[in-house]
Image (cartoon, rainbow, N blue to C red; front, side, top):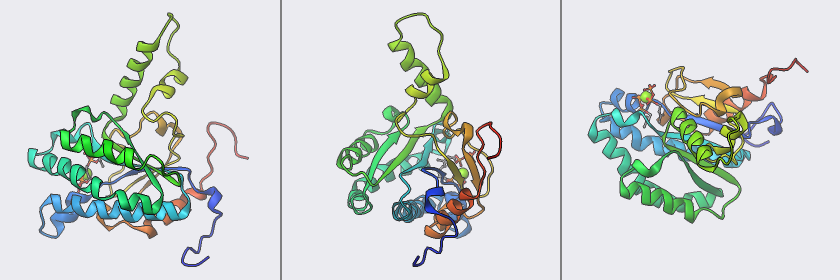
Length: 240
Ligand code: IPE
Ligand code: IPE
Ligand code: MG
């Protein structure tokens, strides 16, 4: 099995991994660098993890890039993150082609800077034909916001007075055609969701790691997936 040495069958691996990429700022501060240096390194970590997801054959991975609450950070940091989206995404198109990843956006991108919005839309378009792996970028994403926008979409289409159902909400959330997340990973030591994919997290498995996001790579993703493969998911039923 080469350098994989998997002790579980890959078909027990999650089909959809969600990643809360936390710890960029602390990674940089520890080194006496500005927090923005951590965000820069964080992009490299996301590439390493995406490369491994592609190699492992994980079909869907969603990265939490920017939350609806992250606008409250210092103006300079928000501007840097917007610039990073605008400049790095464009230059990563060759990378996405190499790993066979189509990029999709999850979140309300209307609030982004024009340059960031143009870049994410252009990246979606340039990778639309790739089908080995789907990389969703949760940008200006918040679980609450996503549910509210879903309900509003449903209200717009509604033709009678029947009450809303859970199926209606699920089928109107962002990227509703993507299956619910199986495994949510958080780097950086905190044990919380911070408003990430709240609807789809209902039966997700959780895995929290102390390793700061810029230190993540293939090994960390693989070990999270191995751990997931040993979990017993019951979805409210009884053990089989
Ligand atoms: C996560 O790292 C990246 C974003 C939220 C954009 P942080 O910037 O939250 O890093 P810490 O948690 O302050 O170390
Ligand atoms: C969550 O990290 C958001 C992203 C990783 C994009 P935060 O650093 O914003 O979360 P809190 O503030 O520690 O909950
Ligand atoms: Mg953080």
